[in-house]
Image (cartoon, rainbow, N blue to C red; front, side, top):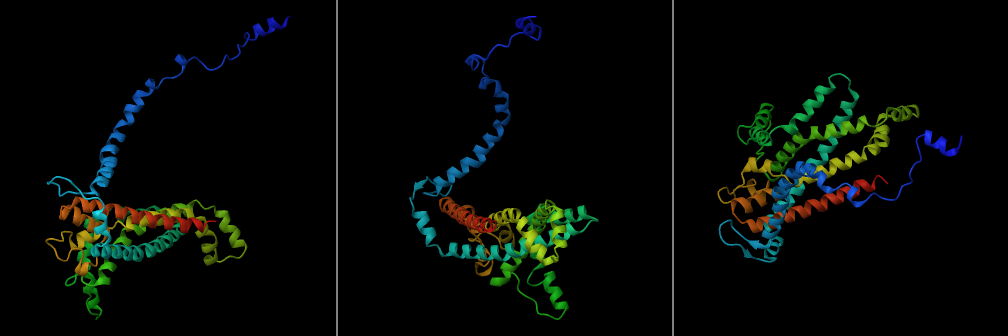
Length: 322
């Protein structure tokens, strides 16, 4: 039997590829228009409620506008005034102090709670739900509750102090006590959220690593610092950056505790402006004083400060991984 006959019975000659298919045979972008239509609402909403506000606020930062009068060009005057604004400097200092006093203890407590949660076996799901509840609770309701708890005259905390023979403390009057109340509120709200994230990271660490360390004679403390912390560095990096972004944008807590309208409330931000944060000051200027141009300049200054601190924290934690 000839070679041609065998090839024909096997299925015929295979035609060699003559190169890429004709242009008309290639898939056209028109065939994907249903997919484009399906995802179009997201991009439209993002453009309207995301890109446009960012671009318009950048435009307002170089103009003066009260929402009614015509927009007038101001150049860099808004930023020059911002650089010399004493109240904004107070807000920056307050925000940084609150961020430091709340973030560092909160992350340490979160890691400790995650370690305890990782060591238990019974009711673990219940503990996770309890830890996560504060982060999904209305922060306005929580702030009102904490305002009643730390009230100067009839607060529950002062009542407990009097019950044990101690003097009451003006929690919402002092420079440092105001910050302590805000830090306690922030810690209560986010410690469980970060603990759940750390717990997920602990679950990803292989158990044989701990078994090998135990065989080598490593104690709990050495195992924690030599194994747990190094293997959790990516998770720690995430929580540090997220906590930095949210902590430097603290707004609702002091706004509910002390009010935000500086024109009608001389203690806006608390007595001595001890609870005035950067975002609260932005809200005052933009929406209480109707100074939208200056408010936009403050917003971009807050963005720059948050970006700088986030990058610094990211570099510090990421460098320790090397």
